[in-house]
Amino acid sequence: MANLVEFSPRLGDMPLQGTLRDHTFTKGLLDAQLVKLASLSSQVTFEENELILADSQRSKHFYLLLTGSVAVELRTSCCTVCVQALGPGEAFGWSALLDQQDTLFRVRARERTAALCLNGSELAKACRSDTQLGTEFLMRTLKLVAGRVKATETRFAEMCGVRM
Image (cartoon, rainbow, N blue to C red):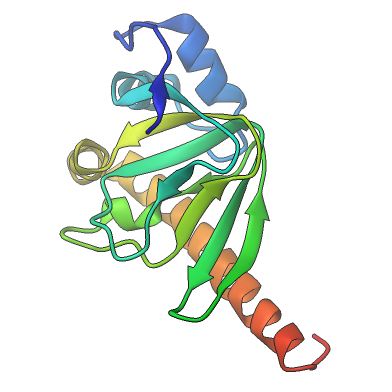
């Protein structure tokens, strides 16, 4: 289970806002939007090989990677395949933005990893109430989803001996 790092996600928490301001996924958002996201965030750490998201589990959190790396995996009854490795500046957990959506991929820490963890239901509410934030966040999330689909397609093509 993730280790919650001690900090106060209060409004105006400058170090957290600075982290969000510099993160690749949230870079360029307005200060007021960063304040809102900071209020929904907590910093978590994961140990090497720790399971962060289990496939078919209800999605509850959206993660922004700060340090370390994770493996996005597709698991079947006979094997587990790493679809994509993610590192600092990348994000995962997009299913948490959807109501009652189960996680499609399994995500595991490849090494000691730190991330910002955003409450998915509160994030979805914030996106609905602030349409500018919602549009920007969802467009960025669509790019993330498209990247995951492309990585899955590439990995399965490799397994079938097809060069992409």
